Amino acid sequence: MVAEEGKVLLDWEALEIGETFPVYEYKIQKENIEQFREGVMDEGASFPTISHKVDVRQYDKKYTDSGSVNARCSFFCYNPPIPGKKLFVTAWIADKYLKRGKNYIVTEAVTVDEDGRLIDRVITHEMKQPGEVGKKWG
Image (tube, rainbow, N blue to C red; front, side, top):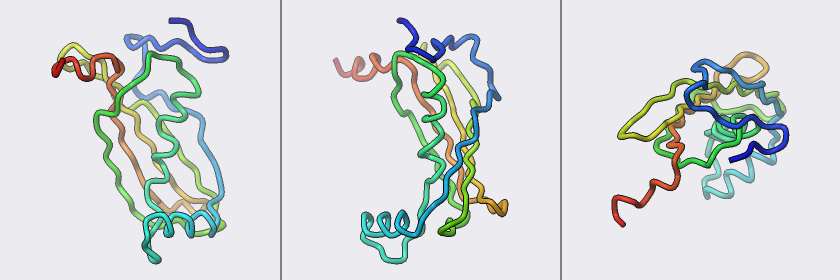
């Protein structure tokens, strides 16, 4: 496998737990929340899982690998975002482990707003051998 231009080919052995990715910053707008509420058909719904949009995105911006399978995600929602406030999402490699001969990477991301309010957190476990899926049923 060859790394895509501007990316690093993943070396699972060399991957450092604690590696932090650049902070992703954006401003949530009232329209974003209204679209979300319409999509979930709940006029009073909060806007959860903001950090989930970034946790593996920042990883994918840096690394090339053979793909992955989402093995598990945990979402923790603390405060709804306030329209017009800047949001800052920090993502990092929280862990890596070998299970049944397969490599896993755990990314974690946390969102806070410009006032320091904790919005949400997501922890994602990804198996880095997508070709292994379905073999036990094959």
